[in-house]
Length: 171
Image (tube, rainbow, N blue to C red; front, side):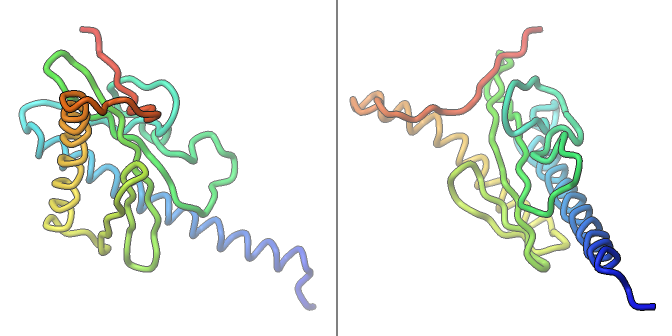
């Protein structure tokens, strides 16, 4: 007996579900690697980077699956995923959220930082490739502060830029 149209759709949906789970799993693995490596790169003596939601309120803690843009969606979509990195930026407990968006194509992971540069990792990842991304993230955060100070010092700090979400963790 030939397959019904519903059976064809069901098979396609099954394959889609497998690919969307694979996409999520690989992006989550990369996100966790970035979090751990960036924290170690910034200060190996303390926890200073957390996976947080890409939007909305956040605390300096790891949110697990809730740190990803697909959190709360019933059907896991097959699309680029975003997550937030809460990066400690002061000794007073201030954390800045960076939003990274990952898109997998073949054996490459494209990681866009905020609305800026996109970095490419070849899968499986290697420490040297992650190190290049860590350097870019460090420079991005440092430039965010130093660039605004420079603009202020030189009289051109007014803009429509909303900026980053920065929170202070109370002890």
